[in-house]
Length: 86
Ligand SMILES: [Zn+2]
Image (cartoon, rainbow, N blue to C red):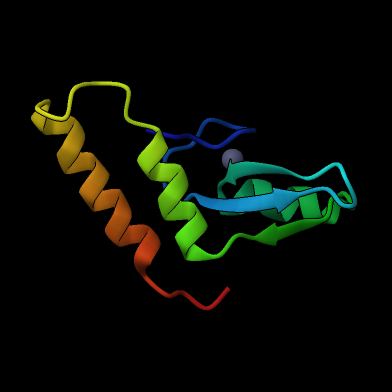
C-alpha cells in the first residue's frame, strides 16, 4: 500500500504530478503535504483518477490470495474513486 511520499501518511492520498517541464515525477501526497509543498512554490497537478488506479494496480507485490491485502486495495480504490471537489 502506498503512503505519502513526504510524511508517510496512509490516508486521503492522491497522486500528483510534481514539477514542470521534463522533470515531472508522480508522487502520492496527503492533503497536508500538498498544501505545504504548494505554499513552498512546488508545482503539483492532481493526476486523473484512471492514472491513480493504474498506479494502484502496479503496486501489489504479494500474492492475490492474501485476503487482507486485497480488501485494503478495494477499499482504497473506492476512496480514490470518490469524486471530491479539489
Ligand atoms: Zn504527507
